[in-house]
Length: 372
Image (cartoon, rainbow, N blue to C red):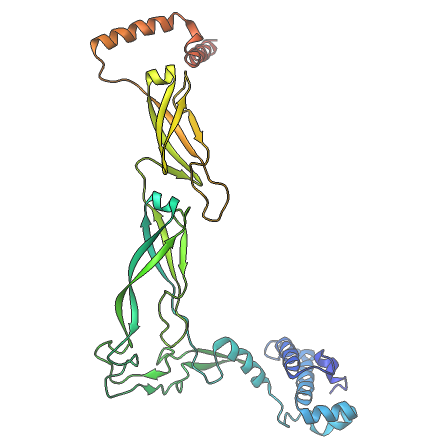
């Protein structure tokens, strides 16, 4: 066996604490354990070397002797594993106990998170509001006081796990804990269930919550209500409730990001001559000036009339897209007037209809190229 310095073997200083020693030993044991390094003599020697060093330094009396006399002070106990030092399984029991809730205590589990789908109007989503929601909730059974057992009886300690709610499974040199299959983590079994809750310890009732919807939310946003989720079955903290927002379609406005969008139909004469229209916004009406010669699909932007972002920032705009409406159900006189009007337009060449003339010229060029 190597006569290397034990502190050097573990990679710690001489004033290392008990926690430092355990941490160093865990690291080396995981690296060099024979189960992880089959048929590797060097790894096996390093594992034994680290084990001896830890057993000596983890025992206060043997460590004091080693600090004063070196290897000579502890040679008689080398490799023995006695003297009260923690073993390999003790060290890794600490590790897996931390992870899987060991240590002889029943582990408390957090309640499940819940989701509630809330449909709201565009106005409320943009301006913000407070909504009332009702949802089912678990409460402690009044009949059995939450024990789940019939009146006059009480639950029995689970014989499989001894009331811990966990059972230990040995896999190689790993010791893994898992939920007890008999009591499902409760630590208790019930031979005579309560008639009120059928042994669950809980009954269901409706509860009402107020949900503050902040201004600017949109479909897909979630609002978290901490502690309003499902109650833990064994005394742990309750889960959270997530309110999922869905905004109903609006008859006038659409939404793209922080901008609102609406389509504004205008008459043929207004588009040609220009004019002024009243258009709606979510906080009132505004005047929209239509320049003469406005074409269909033209978009007018009203600054600051959109949505203020829920997480802060500049308010969006209202984008008004105009659609020139073709007159229908014309009278005879109206038809004659339009024919006269069309004649005057045609005689003006491309001056009055530049887009139409440009398109016709393009079509003519296309067919000329085909014939060529």
